[in-house]
Image (cartoon, rainbow, N blue to C red; front, side, top):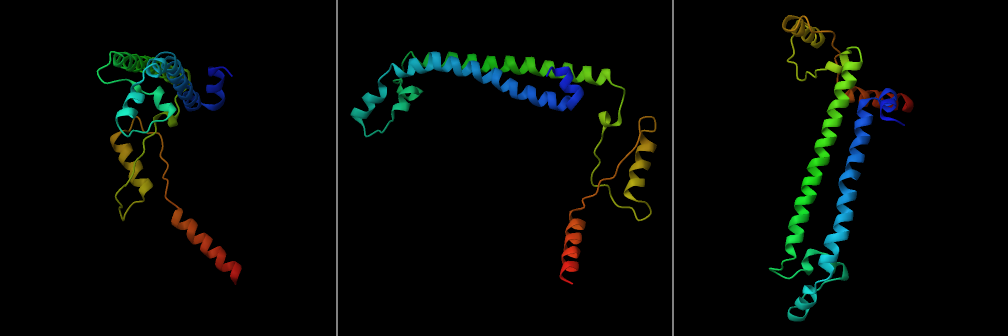
Length: 178
C-alpha cells in the first residue's frame, strides 16, 4: 500500500510507525553485512585466544574467535574496529537525519492538506484544583475563554472511572449471590 493511501486509511501515526520499523532495517541490515564482511574475518584470522589459553586458565568457545577478544593487545587490527565504529555511527546518524526530515515533511504536508480539526491542537490539562462553586468542566472552560478567547474551541473532561468500575462489579456480584 502506498504511503499516501496508508495515511488516508489509517492515519499519519500508522505511517510513521511503519517508517520506524523500516528505519531499523535501513540501519541494521547494512551494519550487519559490513560487520560480517569486515570485522568477523579480521577477528577470526587471529589466534590470541589460543595463545591465552596456553598461558592462563581461560575458557573460550568457538564463537569467541569471531569477537574482538581474539585480537591481541596493541594490534593494528584494532583500527579496523575503530573505523567501523565510526562508520556505523555516521551511517546511523545519516539514516536518522533523513528519516526525521521525511517524517517532518509528511507531518507538515498532512497538516496543511486537511482542514483544521480540534484534535490537531489538543492540550491535556491535569490536576485542576477543585472549586466548591464550579465543576471542573466549568473551571477549565472559564480559564481558556478568559486567557485564550480567540483560540478556544471546546473541552472534554475525562475522569478516572476505575473505582466506579470496581464498585459496579462488586454490586453485580452481590446481586448474583442474592
